Image (cartoon, rainbow, N blue to C red; front, side, top):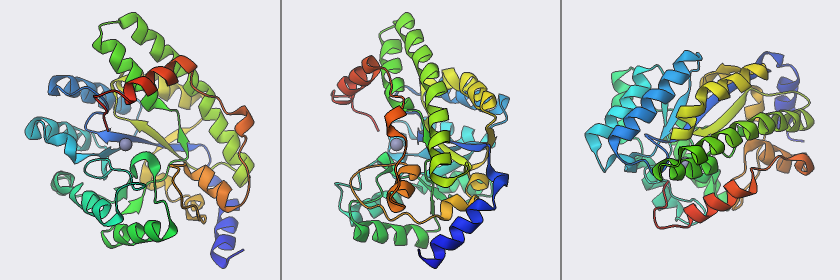
Length: 313
Ligand SMILES: [Zn+2]
C-alpha cells in the first residue's frame, strides 16, 4: 500500500463527522431533456429551486453552455436564478462530449469553453467556478488521457465532482418528459411513482455498498439532473433523505470527507461512480447481486427515446 493510500485510510477511519450527509448535484443545466421552450424551462427551474430552498438544500448545478445558444438571454437568466437562490454552479463542459471518443485536446477545448457565461455570473456573486463534472462520468479511456485532462483541470483551478450515489433519474426523466409532452398525465404520474419507489430502494443500496467497501459511510455526492421530473419530485426525494437520516450539505462540505482522497486508479471506457472506482482500485467487490434495477418498461422506453432523432445532452 502506498503512503498516500495508508494516510487516506487512517483519516477515513477517524472521520465519523461526515457520516449521514449528502450533497445534491444536478447535471445538464439550465434544463435537462427535451424541454426547449424557455417558458417551460423557467417553470421547471423555479419549481426545482423552490423545492430545494423549502428543504434547506444547498445544491450545485453543472452547466452545459451549449444549451444557451437557442436563447442566450432567456436561458442565461435561468442560470442566474440558481445563484440568486443561493446554489452553486459548476462546469459540465460546453457540449457534453464523451472523453471516450473525442480526442483529449478537443475535449479540453470544449471544457475550457464551458464556463464563459458561468464565470461572469459567478463573478457577480463573488464566486469563481471550481467544480467540474465529467459528462457520462467518463474520466478517460487510458491513464495517459485521464492524467492529461486532470492536469488541465488543476491548471484551470477545477476539482472533479465525483459521484457516490445516483438513482438513474435521467432515464425516468426522459420517459416522464415524453408522457407530459404527449399530454398523458396518468402515464407521467405512474413514472413519477416508479421513480420515487426506485429511489427508496437504490439509496440504501449505495449506503450498504459504501459500508461494505469503506467500513463506514462517506459524505455522499448524489448525481441528479435538472429535469422536470426532479422539479416535480424534489419534496419526495427530500423526504426519502430525511427518512434515511441523510442531512443535505454543500458539495464543498461533502468533499472535505477524506474518502475523496482515496486512490482511484481506474482508467477505461466505463463511466463508473466512485464507489466502483475505489472497489476496482482496492480489488474489492460491491454487492451487485442485490442491486435494485429500474423497472424494465422504463429502461426499454428510455433506450428507445435515447436512440431517437431528438437525442439530448
Ligand atoms: Zn450530463
